[in-house]
Length: 596
Ligand SMILES: [Zn+2]
Image (cartoon, rainbow, N blue to C red; front, side, top):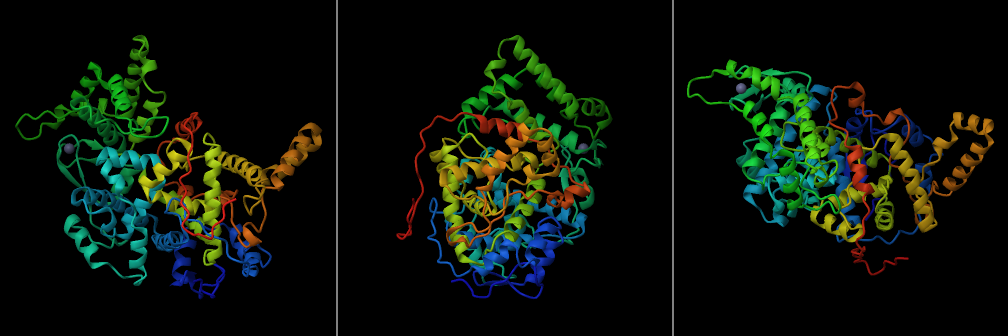
């Protein structure tokens, strides 16, 4: 049932935000979302305040007959989408205007998420009856799943394939959350606390120090939270309390890489991050991984490098000064890049370079450089990006309207059919489709099987494209969609860039160019309509709205480094030609559904 109490999000701080009967104080929601200054652009605000805006139009057209919803892959349904929306609302509340406190919270949450994965691995609960994760852990888990390939590789590499059987307990958590905002499931809380010795609810004013183990002398170091955050950003170094070595993200992550190479050389089941997935289907391919790891790292000079940065125990208390020159000189990324160049040169001389997968070294570097937790991506940056995106999703849909949610399932189905037809293209989703996509990813094993059946490979979700590439790909997606379905794709005009004043001037100066622009505009004009969906009742915004307002406020203030750009290597994955015959794996459980 859809409540009749319809609100226009963002117009009043007094009215409740309504998602399927779940009343959540809008004032608290607004404060958390608005204070990020990133989820809602001023343009979007204006649209909401403006009675002629598309969302107001959709409000006025609320009497259209509801669309027949689909259930895609037994997972993406109206029920799971509502549960996911409720969950996203809870995520938007994880924010603190004091940036240091916010980053501390995220840094602590990252480590708690790692503890959570250990809990699943060690307690091995039945996949359909796992305890409920704390909210901060849930945020990291959801964000991690949207980095599809990294998630898969991280879980298999760190724990084993059995971890992919664990789905995010979306419906169970939603049922528990329905008990009230502050309700805590006692059993889950007890399981978590007895395993982790951590509080179930993470507070922003948690001032406990962080503990890191010096990878050279193995002694534990306590670090105050702000220093830890700065250390993660490679902005400071910390002098080890025991061996006095200056530890920073560069040294720590270089040591992490060399440790992993050492583990591989001891036992070749321990392949490095970035090497486990094959480049065709994005499936785990141990044979290929072992082959590449051996060719790249099984060299005497790599063993010598590992020896140089390894502690030597004399049995006498700390003689660290003996080792410092070797370690600081060798254990850094400048030196590692030099060693890697030597590896490539040697392989080329031996005629072996062709036997190593292209770009595998850059994938390894991406998975290690400046990252000193076991994950192979900057998970804090990924969470910030994820939060920003889901806040946009929340603000760009008339989500309290069940019809909107129902139409989203249909459009997601169509989007996946388009992917099936164009497996080599990066298709950019609209907000409604993205919500469905993210929901699907919360069931990792199902998602892998589904997209392999559809496109011949596990479909990655590229979220690191530059804005210009994203807009260009969105434009192409809108054109492909219109060509296939003869209907508009988005409620926003994807031809904005062709209407800029500079292009208009250029068109007058160079008439041939003018004709080209006119043709583009003519084609793109068909791809959007402010009233998308059956009965014209759905307003959906495009994924990226152009303009500087979309820049993450944290990013703009520049305190957080966002890792290595993996755009090109991901593009390479997408450009692989896939030859497997696709098969349909959609499931429809609603007998009224008609697919045309
Ligand atoms: Zn030390």
